[in-house]
Length: 41
Image (cartoon, rainbow, N blue to C red; front, side):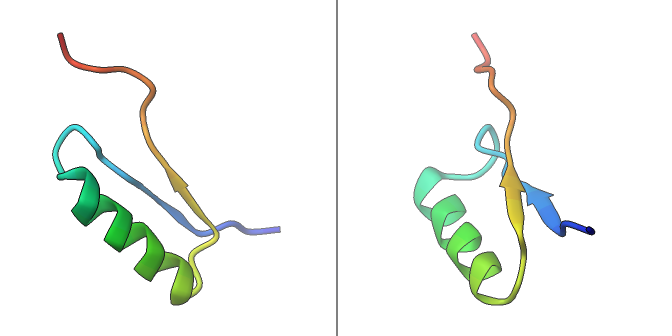
């Protein structure tokens, strides 16, 4: 099965804007959102 997703770059985008984008993506049919699991020092 194909899964359509995108990388949610929390290092570059404000968390509120990122959450809005993820909610919108889910509403239009994206199946997944991925992000890295590290923080810049």
